Image 1 (tube, helix red, strand yellow):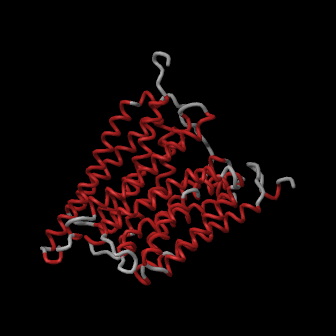
Image 2 (cartoon, rainbow, N blue to C red):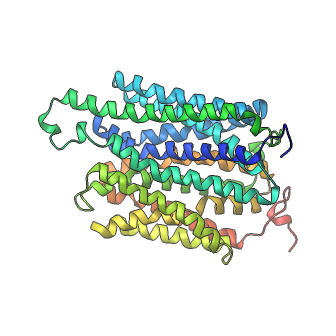
Image 3 (cartoon, one colour):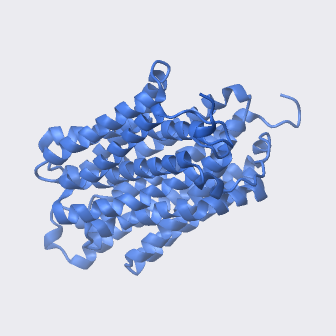
Length: 423
């Protein structure tokens, strides 16, 4: 390496830690849900507002985040994102101090706003840090560490937030206020530890800013989301992403309480949270297995197969019990694994809008994580957690229909409608 030149490998290490961090924090919401539900005596629908507040940021902040990255560049945008995430983590103890659930929701929105900026900056940055022909490898590697974060977080989060206090075996005989205070402190401890982790990461990124300059600055674009909305396939792809993210988040959000049910496994909430790691582990393993399968199967065929199997598993969970229901629920993560990238690429191939406009619309569709979980919670409150799995089942059936429709559609060049493509 020449003197004065930055090492792209060091920059990639810095960016990969960002992927791990936002995966870790996103999955920490899953054990937080049963914790706040018990502490604040919430219904399932009310506890699912944690996911609503978190994923709402994707719909609101995505466009401003893109403008911020274009204006400040990668390094300073990442630092701004990390500082916002730290601020959100520090709001949590303030909210628990006054015992206001609404404050927790505000904190989660702030944290997710920072993560949204982080994703807008980190995805293209990981792809740009080196030779173009190896961009897919770099992005896959970074996303693997993102998945690792989602596997570790529920296990650690359950150890911190779902033990002692209101979850202690003898909590019924103890002073209610004191018991609640213990569980609130456990939440504080969890997010203060996350704030400390992010602070160390921010210091690392600050010291590594020069390394991030090895990537070209993000290109300015005048592509409008309205252009994507004029493409039928871009809108269909957006709907499919909303359904996928909503289903995945809904299942992850309910699994701890589901495994806790006496007619399923009857384990403690802490144990259920640790088992939840298997759901996200399946997603991580499936991404690598899916990459291999895509060398033998068309994307439309593989997407239709995994969506159908995921829907079938949801149906079994809704009607079953015991170990079979638990195993099927956890196995859904494996079949979730390749849905997002396949929906994304299939939509880009068929959209008549530009790739930039289409990608922007699809990234905003992650807001689906704010839409389906509260609806799942309403079903759980009225008909039980088993029945609540029917909503993700419908989502997966519609994704299967999307894949079958994509198989029959022609790939249209940008700027042409499908009817204009030569036969």
